[in-house]
Length: 251
Image 1 (cartoon, rainbow, N blue to C red):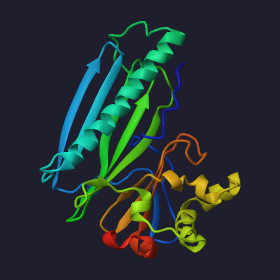
Image 2 (cartoon, rainbow, N blue to C red):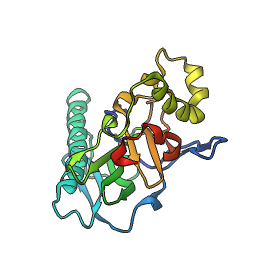
Image 3 (cartoon, rainbow, N blue to C red):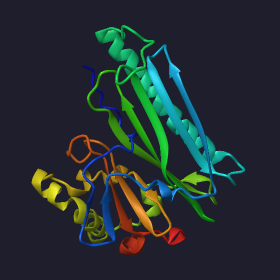
Image 4 (cartoon, helix red, strand yellow):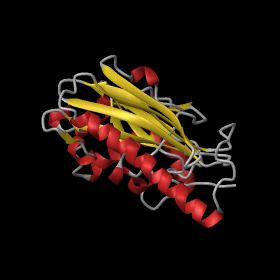
C-alpha cells in the first residue's frame, strides 16, 4: 500500500475534529469557509483522467475578474501546476521502486492516484489579493491522502507577493508573543503536550502560510505540520487581535 508525504505546499477540504476556543477572536475549524470566496472572483475548472500516471485530476483556479494584468492569474496557475508536476514526479519515483499500477484504466474507488486543488478563501480590495488553495493528493490504494494549503497574498500596487515579513512587523519578543498567544488559544494544549523546544518553530511562523480576509487572518496548518497526524486545521484570528503587528500599508 503506497503512502506519500508531500511537501508542505498542499491541502484538501476533508479534515476532521473541528474545534473552537473560548475566545471568539480565534477559531479552529476543519475547513476554511468556502463562502469566503468573493463574488468578484472568476473560477476556471478542469477535470480529467491521465492514464499515463493512473491519475484523476480535479482543479479549480480562482483569480479576480479585474486582474487585467494577469500577474496574479499567472501566480495561481503556476503554483497549482507546479504542485501537480511535483506529484507526477513522485508517482514516477514510486513506480520505479515498486512497479507501476497494474490496471491504469481502472478509476473506481481508491484504485488510482488523485490530485485535487480548489480555492478555499478568496479576498481582494483596492490594495491586496489573497487566495488560499486547498491541494490534496492520494496514491492508489492509500488509506489516507496528504492534505495541505497554499496561500498567495499579492500587493496590487507593487505587483509583488506579500510575504510574512512584508505583512507583519515582528521586532521584539513581545511582538512574537502576540501571535503565539493567538495560536495557543487554539493549539496551546497540543503544543504543551508535545513540548517543542521553540514555539515559533512549532507553528512554522518563519515560513508561515497565512491567508488574508477583510477582518481576519487565517493561519493554515497542513497534515502532520503540528504533529497531530492527518487532520489539517485552519486557525482564523481577528485582525484586531494582531493589529499592532500589521504593517501600516495593510492595516
